[in-house]
Amino acid sequence: MFKTHYTIYQIDAFTDKTFKGNPAAVCVMENWPADELMQNIAAENNLSETAFVVKNQDRFEIRWFTPTLEVALCGHATLASAHVLFLYYHVPGSQLHFHSQHSGDLYVSKKDDRLTLDFPVDPIEPAEPPVELLEAFKKKPLEVYQGKTDYLLIYESQKDIEECNPDMTLLKKSKARGIIVSAPGKKAHFVSRFFAPGSGVDEDPVTGSAHTTLTPFWSEKLGKKKMKARQLSKRGGKLICELKGDRVLISGRAVTYLKGEIEV
Image 1: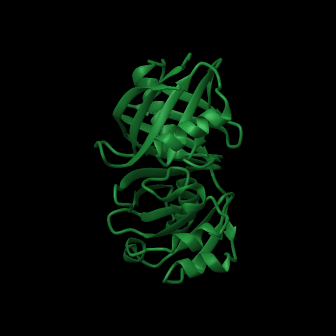
Image 2: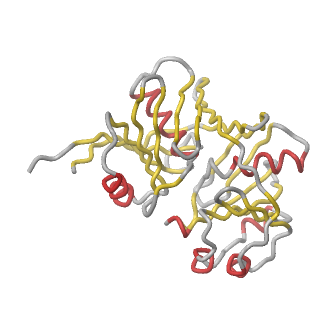
Image 3: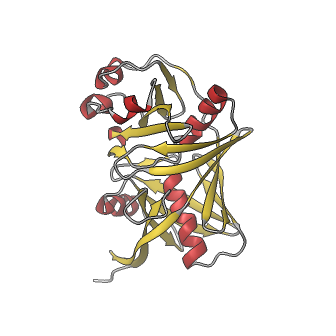
């Protein structure tokens, strides 16, 4: 039986150390395979995201899949994709242009070993969340907002974020892509965690796309355009975020964990 072979990379994003940050799989392909195949590959990888990239003239089309569904935007897997394209495909220049069907034009620039995402801001509004969402957390948030796909819950302190242990069954009923919890940080301007059981990921280690929501929020709260952020998952991640008009710059590093071949 004839089988197709694809090269696959596993990259730890938003870290400079293997086994930290957020792992993402990246497949650079000549043409788009069937959606079912991409979803099956993502499920087999069982990572929070698998990115699929196809070159289209002077830009790269990109799509992202969790183990259970396709998502509209993913930051760490885009950072991982840029790492792969610069390092293994030797794409010239210092900036990559990605395009996503649901999130439009995305850019990643490279300076030394740091990569910077250039993503659109996720506008948020105060929200009345589903009862199940609030019941999932033992402590009531100070404020609740809603963006395009996520809820943002604001707490008083970093300790509140560290101690979050939500009921994933209840969170899954919220019908949101994910739930961001955030507070002022001790060694960073703000800290966060990201829960997405409805998208097949109980807790995401480092969520670049969540910082398109967090950056404008904390920029207004703190009166700063450029901030240091930490995501307080078990693996942990460090980001530098900057608000530039209706765009957010999110910077971090990435390291390769694995290069292999898929046979399907």
